[in-house]
Length: 501
Image 1: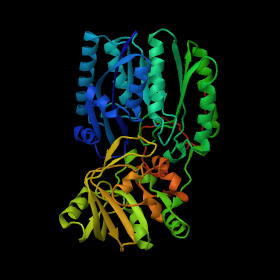
Image 2: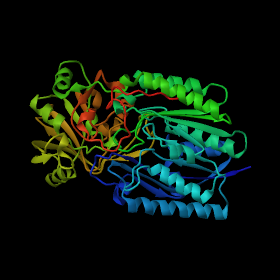
Image 3: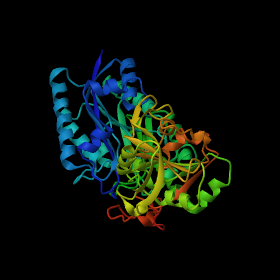
Image 4: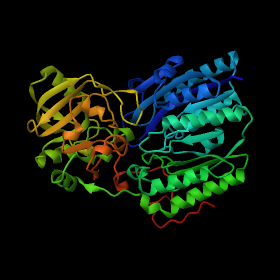
């Protein structure tokens, strides 16, 4: 029997400290589609929808898509834009119910969306979908590892599955797992029951890296629990710490086959494991000057991660603190990728390749990570900014930086700045190779990223330094003015006590 599934999702990772709203333009600049074309766009890619399509074929499922959108992380989603996309989503859902019917729903959501006036964006999305389809249609949701899972989300969805990896290289696999479990639910083969535990821990993005450290150990336990009798799936999330909301933070979630007490037992076990290691989920960073000195005196390529200016966490992408320090240290064979400054790109385009321009770069969206910096630079390359991802993240999909200029500061072997007109976070080496820079031949590579760069940049690096700079995704909690977190929470309240029971 062929099943009919409905899919879609509004995606945003909201940094409450950003003043840049997620409006319609921001969604359309990154990803916006509706209907069959969104499925065709991702067919054959290792993405969420690529996974849904693969699993649909093997599980005899016909997929109908509604709005699928993603806006680059920033401040809260504009309420009117959320309502517009939500109205289209529910219109498509009602039409699907009226025509062929809907047996199940699989959604690709992020889990850390804040809408103006709505702190739990995904909870609101699910509530409106559930109101239309009623209590009996199974709903499965794929979430980001940085999801701030709320009790409302866990109550409204039958199955939540988060990415296991950061860098996120398993979106495709988790999508296959999710759709398969929802199909089995529809066919009556399983009866999902779940338990959620929220941990009062702020975990910085850098220590949510699942390749090593406490997150790797926690993930190993999660996989061991998934293999136990009666367990259908288990998810751990590090949370997105820059969403200043009560539901922020880490979570453990377990789904069992009709065994709610077992789900609770295993969710408690996962939670207690992480709580016992709570001090390990705090960052260990290197000062800007120390990192540059070390990177200049050892064999390269050496990567300096500007974690505080990660646009993938809602930062501005135009912080100048590290660039200013590279110039002050007279760094050679250094590249910074990317610096967001569409005005400077426009100047470079007007001057043309081969020209030397004097301009002011960065510090225009947010000067908390450094004031605008006056530079004299040679315009070496101008491109349209498009490239294909060849690395392990979103393999086969296309990424656009907008018009992009490569600027040389301090001569040919000095500092190269990849200046983009669209905010992007580096996770694929093609971001450099597409503009004529071979990363393996550079001494220092500064990436404005927290962890995603490790998927493709990590293998070429002789060493990596996570740098303690200022910015909207700062690693030091003292730099951020939290107002709405549930308290107590670690490490803001270091002496607090907590138990999963």
